[in-house]
Length: 275
Image (cartoon, rainbow, N blue to C red; front, side):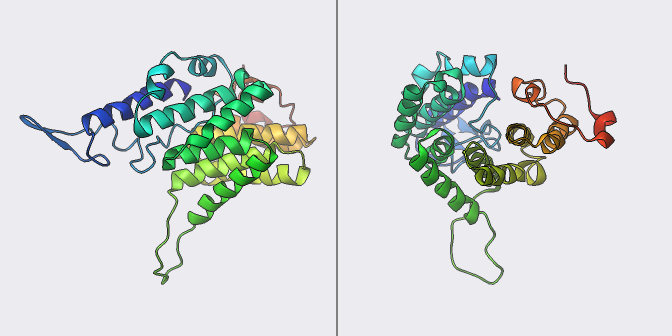
């Protein structure tokens, strides 16, 4: 997932250059015929400018370190419009998730820089990151914004004709994960359990179309329960990750290895070994 970020940003930058005055993915007229920039259709949301399969969350490791320090950021963050804004948002995300964000002053500086987000996609990424890495007040405000999007994802009751904004399904998945991750890292045990419940929406409701995010949610949930002393619950989630998503990058990650969980006896025979 980390390796795809720079190519995605280059793709939306190219689309902007090809179609500077054309909205969405409509073809633009060109001398000698037409061009159809279908390279971005289907994997880039026209409204948000984001790729639904590339959420701004990653596991730590060499790939993330490479992304956080990639030389390509210099040119991308200086692009005009949405491209430059999303590049700045994703560079911030990469740094916050990497060891670079472990320093409190560096983390605060990166979070402060996210206040300049204006596009619908940039604001979504900002709220996801601030909910996890902001201070107490910032986290709560960002969680409120995430909840508002989740509430808007509920279909309007039949017979109600009042116009309303409807959150796309993939955006709900991102918001559920970000809200769950944020709550799971709070100090209060009740809040942490609420976070695990939010995270479990991913494998339960979005596990097919968002397998990467579902695997990360199971990883986060297992780690949270293990840290709270619920080894059995952590074991169930760890087993769910390894059995349902055996090729997920989290399976062999440090995050999963350090979860000392009790795997249910009835499921031990089905559990693939973690190398």
